[in-house]
Amino acid sequence: MYIIDAHIHPFIEGRDNTGLVRYGGPRSPEEFVAELKRAGVSKACGTVISPTDGKDFADIKRLNDDAIKLWQMFPDFFIPGIHIHTHHVEASCREIEEKYVLGVRWVGELVPYMTGHDLYATRDAFPIYDLMQEKGMALNIHPTTDADLEELMQNFPRLNIVVAHPDEKPEFEAHLDRMRRYKNAYLDISGTGLFRNGLMRYGIDRVGKERFIFGTDFPICNPAMQVHGVLYEKLTSAEFEAVFSGNFLALTA
Image (cartoon, rainbow, N blue to C red; front, side):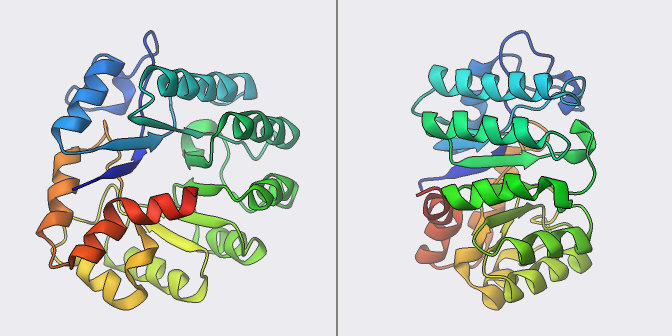
C-alpha cells in the first residue's frame, strides 16, 4: 500500500521538538523518518512548528527554511509544507513566490494558536489566498470557527482547502456539510476522530472518496494507529488508494 501522510510536524537538528509530544518521540530527523516508515508511511508532508517560534515573520521564514532543508535531506520521503501568516500579508506573498519556484505546492498545516493569529478569513489576508489560488496551491488548516471556514471557502472557490481533524460526530457532520456545499472543501483525517469505528465508511458514503486526505499528526499522534484505522475500515481498493495517496497527489498535481 502506497501511503502519503499529509499531516506531520517534523523538526531539524537543533530545534526543540519536546513541546509537541507528551510521552517522548523521535530525537532526530533520521529517527522521525524511520518511525513513519515503520508505521507503513511511504512519503510525508507537513510544516515545521515550534512552541517557541512563529509569532514574528522571521520565525515563520526560519520554520519554512527548515522544511526546505528537510526536503533536501530526505528528497525521496519528505514533501515540504510552508506557513503563511495573516498578520504579515506582503511577507507571506513573497514567501509563497519564493518557495513556489522551488517546487512547494502545499501550505500547512497552519496552526493559528501557535503562530499568533486567530482567524483565516480576514479581509487584509485575502491577497495571500488570491495568490495561492492563482498558483493552484493547496491549503491545510487547523479548524477555527464554522463562520471563518465558511467565509474562506466561499470567497476562494478555486482554492482547495483541507481542514484538519474529523473530531467528534457534531464537528465531523459540520465538516461533511461544508464538503457537500463547497467542492473545494476537503478533510484531513489526522488527530481525533478515526478511532470512532466506521468514520471513513460513513464519510465516503456521504461525500465520496475524493474528499479525504490521509494524515497522522506525527509526532503528536501515533502514526500506526492512523494507518491501521483506515485499513480496518470496509473500503474498496479504489477508496483505499484515493484516501492513502491519490487525493493528495491530485491536489498537488
